[in-house]
Length: 401
Image (cartoon, rainbow, N blue to C red):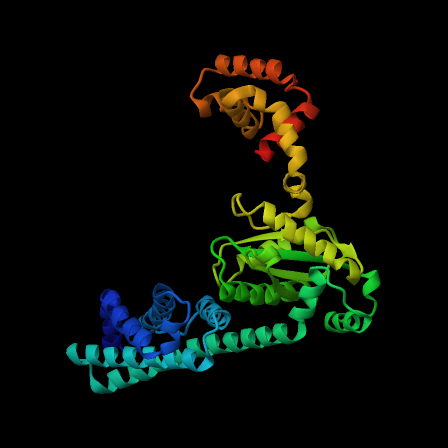
């Protein structure tokens, strides 16, 4: 039965009072379903997801149509998100039912106040529930698929064994064979493997990093068709790192867009840092790629959040981190004689890409003043800022500081 004009009039009125309607529904779900308030979820996140579903239903009722493919897809992503957040299946269903019941009661009340014919009100309510059922089915199917992926990743990726391999602990031949079975490879000595290290950009929460790990295992496995090994490590008692590895025959540069796409698709919206180790031949050499990814992650923690960074693109930072004595000597040789003003000028000059005008603008000085200071730096430090080798030494000294 088509939606009648008086029911559409109710839907239009409900949209005008949408914020009040949403407040009543969200309050009821939040207070009634314990897992939502006890999990590490934000009430605003719950409100956003309920708001989207309720708005979809009312708009579909108003326009007398079924949910679009895009609306169903957004609902499916919501289901994935709940699975990754660890919300129990029963809680997901219960929250949907509570929202449905509250919306139905509100709709019935609006129909009564706006004197909708009882038969039309009943038909409109039936249509509204059918629309909600379509959205719920889309959400629950995606939820169950993600739950299965999470269970599979816990079972198949052998996180404990992989973590031991990643940090270089010895594993026997039988364990190597087990990892080969998990990966679906007959000869792991002839396959190349690359590691990806991921950490939270903010905070160090075990539950959050586990959700990130599960999500990326699912996304990388789906994108590459290869099983992704994964585990969680905490090098030197520092921040937790989700470590992933997969068979990767190409270069690390070609893995960057794959990792970035997996992060961009994140249903978690977690800001993360990711680094990629160089592919290594043979499963026994995988720990080298793992150590590279972990080390690169460690030296990029203070910089801007990027989607993904290769180990080979952090070699300068790695050298700074690994050779503190050598770098202290570089600083003593090239920076100590300068004094604070000349050192600051040099630092800005290097940071600007050796641009005179940018340095002058940053320091609020005349360009000729910067030229004079750079000449003084060359005289005092005994360097030539037009010589790439001297510039490299200066950069190392600055990074050492």
